[in-house]
Amino acid sequence: MTYGAFLLLYVLPPTVALAAAVVRWRSGVRVRELLAGIGVLVVIAVVYTTPWDNYLVASETWTYPEERTWGIRLGWVPLEEYCFFVLQTVLTGLWVGLLLRDGSRRRAGGGGYSSRALGAAALLSIAGASAIAIARGPESLRYLGLILAWAAPPIALQVGFGADLLLGRWRTVLPGFAVPTIYLSVADTIAIGAGTWHITERTSTGILLPGGLPVEEFVFFLVTNLLVTFGLVLFLVPEGRERARAIVAGLRGRGAEVSRA
Image 1 (cartoon, rainbow, N blue to C red):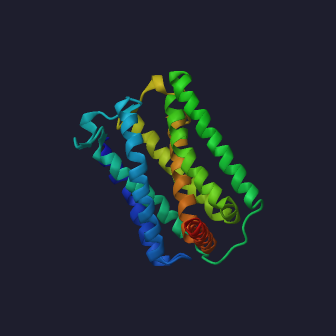
Image 2 (image 1 turned 120 degrees about the vertical axis):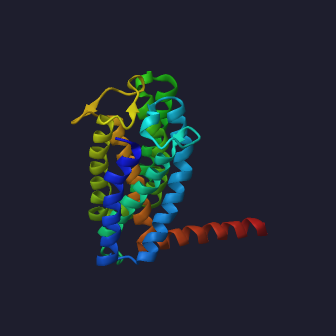
Image 3 (image 1 turned 60 degrees about the horizontal axis):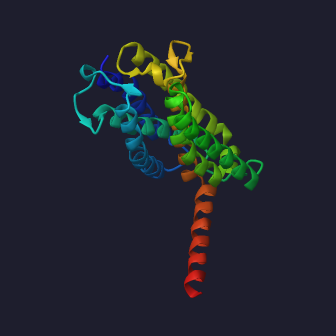
């Protein structure tokens, strides 16, 4: 199976179906706001993921048989991979938008500042430990370490901003990242079995999930769908926008004080 066929068979159809469902059923947020949030996340995904993915391919952490791609590469990465960045973000974003049927204000989850601070600290610790594993650990930890070192800091930023808001909407957040993670993991298992891409054994832990999926691939889909779900929920809910405005106003106030001093 080629990479283009993978996108056509397993990524485009659910994306189109979810887009139709969002338009038909109207979620609790305005479609224009949902599309704006997804658009912002698409730009962030492409900009943030491109250097990381190019390094992974250049270092042969994973590889793509040339005959399985369109033959167009931007840097080290085939064009289809960039398409996947965009489509996965849109797919998960539309799913979250569909789940976010109730756009009204919700009471924040327990913990408040403490949950935000502790969650962010834990994630930054994971990023630090992963960086150490990449630098000093066995080569078999490289792929897992690269995933966690790359994903944990922005998730820490999201959690530090609004862990309590995410907990308050856990009925949206949990299926928001869980369902696309499971679906894309199954699709990935099929693609690896069909030789669409290959995970290098020496840089992988060798731990396989049912169907032969390397555990690193599941972790990749988990963290990327967390990033999209957390980011979109915080962008769309009223409490998130109010908190962002309060932070900006506070920074401007401090800037004005410094300039007067």
